[in-house]
Image (cartoon, rainbow, N blue to C red; front, side):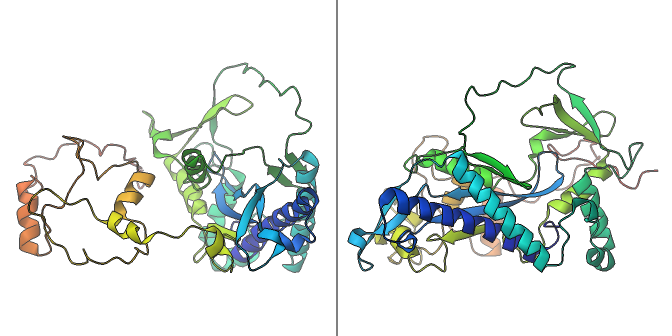
Length: 387
């Protein structure tokens, strides 16, 4: 039901993060000897994931939470905030968070008129089935992981097994105190810890929690026209991939799309934009960062651009920074000499753009005399409409 009820989904993720906040505050009070839990200030980021590794509709949350609290120096609210690291949470701490979250979620479900009995929960919500029957059917098929076409219509897709008798995964010698807990359907896994000073690992973790539902290089078309979705990790039963008809991919992709006006990334505590303490913990760009928004000056004549003398900090990240962090593409380094790139020419009229494209071999050209039946690389050709 979290897949289609955006209000309920937002309230559930807020309830979970509120319980994490409460746990951190009380642990900080005991470990740091604070006078009140109100003296501790926490922060975190939660990313809403709508699908699992098999592209089934399975709403869950990935959260990054500070492993400590911010407190004012000498308990003076006018003094700067300083960060105090806390001990790693125990299994008991996580179990308490899970139990309290389960109680809050059950209360939310009652407030929304939802049943707590799994046998009474309908696969297709009545209100969605009336307003958007097609969307409701896609949600139901994606949630159950069933095929909608071909010989396996109404059944789970074909699974490919890595080996007839997969070896059992070795269990940890002592896993009794791992920060993992499950209470009434609320499953919390808090094992991953990253040093905040290791910016590369922090960035990798941020990319992981915000990853897209499916990696295109893991989805390929087989010789028989069916699609094969390979998993990053083999399941416990040895399943390494799923095989389904092209039409079966559509309901899963539809279910992966969030409802309109629903934020998948949510900030809490001191990291929230509504927090009055955010400016005290989030670093602000220095004034000289504005010069980083432009390539370094070239030797000799350099094209003068409007805004070169503007020292105001940029309100957004540069495109070069975004390309480097999202696609690992370095557009500021010359591929020939490994030196820094520089402004050479700016084209802002149609004639200038056409001339520059032609000079670099990117100008308009006539279509080929004969059509070559070559598919676009890394593009799936779905055979819809074929009898």
